Image 1: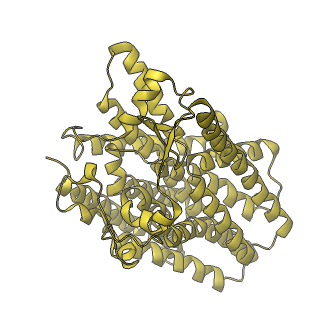
Image 2: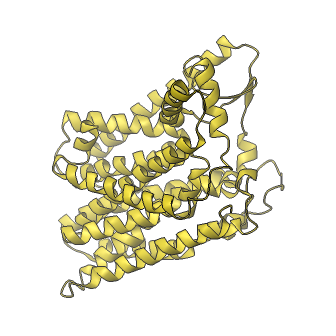
Length: 427
C-alpha cells in the first residue's frame, strides 16, 4: 500500500487517505439509506466464489465455473478479495455471507470513487486552481461518482469495471505527471506504474488495450516528446502483454487439467451485434437512448431503465471537455499548454476508450449499462465537476464563494441519484 501511495505523489499521501475517508463517509450514508432494505436479490458472485471455497481458487484456475462450463470472457481475479473474505467467514461460521459480499462490493466502489476523486483533484491542481478549491472539486467528483446509480447497484453484483476505474484513475495520475514533466521518471515510479498497468490489463484486458490505443492516438496530436512518448507507451504495453499471458495460461491449464470442460461466454459477433440478433436491441440508437435489456437479477422494478438516464452529467462533462480544449487552443503559455495537453490526453483517452468500445461491442454496451456506463460516466464527472469549475475559476477568482456553487451542484446531483435509485430499489 505504501508503494501505491508513493505512486500518486509522496507529498500527497495524506490527501489520498482523506479521499479514502471521504468515500467511507459517503458509503456509510448510502448503506444507511437506500441500501438499508435487505440483500435478498444478490446474484451470481456467490455462485462464482463458492466453488473456489470448496475446491480451491488455484485448482479451478481462478475462473467462473458453473457445472462443467467455464466462462472465459475475462479473468475473474477481481473477485479474489471477496473470495478471501468469504473463505474466512466460511472457516469461522460455516456459511456464505451475502451481507459480507454486499459490503465488500460497496467498499471497492468507495475506493474506486476515492481514486477517481483524487485524479480529479490532481487535474484541478494542474489547471492551477487553489488547493482548497481543488479538494472541493475532487470531493464533488467522488460523491457524484460514488452515488452514480449503477455504482450503487454493485451492491447486487460487482463488475471488473469498478476495479478498472480504480486502477485507471491512479494510472492516469502517473501518466499525466509524466506527460507534462520534462524529467525522466525514477525507477521506483516506473515499477509502480508497471504494477498498475498489469492490474489494469488483468482486470479487463479489452478496455485496457483500447485505453492504451487512445493514449497513443491523442498523444500523437497533443504531445511533442516523441521518444519519451514511445517509452511511456512501451511501459504500459509490456505489463499488459504479461497480464494477458497470465490469463491465457490459466485457460490452457484448465483445458489440460479438465479435458472435458466446456467453454462459455459470448462471441465477438454476438457482442458487436454483427450476428443480426435483435433480441435485446434493434439499432445503435439504443446505445444513445439507453433503452437496453435489463438482466433478471436487476428486474425488481418496471422503472429500472431510468437508472440509465444521466443526461446532466453527460452535458456538464461535455462542457468541461470543450472548455479544456478551448483553453488549450487559446493559451500561448507553453507551460500551460503542455499541462492542458497532458490533461486532454489522459481524460480524453478514458472517454475515447468507451467510444471505441461502444462502436465495437454495441450489444455489450446496450445490454450491460450497469457494467459499462461507468467507463464513460467516470471521466465525464472529472470533466464536469473538476475541469469545468477550475477553468471557470480562472475568471471568477475574485469571488471566493464561487466554488460553493459547484459544490451545491454536486450535492444536488448526488442526492438526486440516490432518490432515483430509491425509486427502483426492491422494497
